[in-house]
Length: 118
Image 1 (cartoon, rainbow, N blue to C red):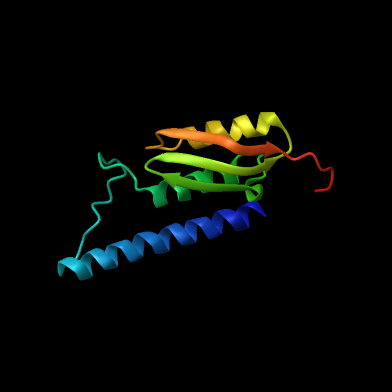
Image 2: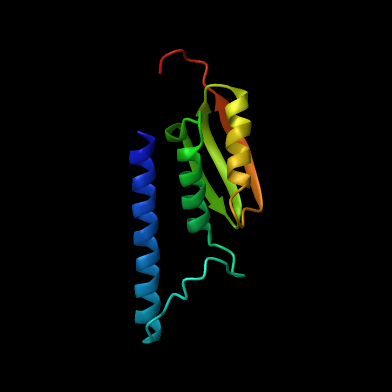
């Protein structure tokens, strides 16, 4: 399940990057060339941060990533949804904080799921 989610996220990220490159080339009339450098001084935009946080949550052990919604506004990641316990909520917060260019993480919308059904 997590592999399928991760592959979906990676595909969406690739399409987003490709679409941005095409839009840039079309709007300027000049094709863009990716230098391939993994390091950049330019911060990731909110969509890229959201995608990276979702991908990290999907591979984090124990976290039910399908039960968490991620939104990013000006570098602030907002997590909403449920997790089985408070420890996993804190783990989700730490995972989100570990993503480059995340300024702050709001977990006020994450609650402990009190139902026993999976």
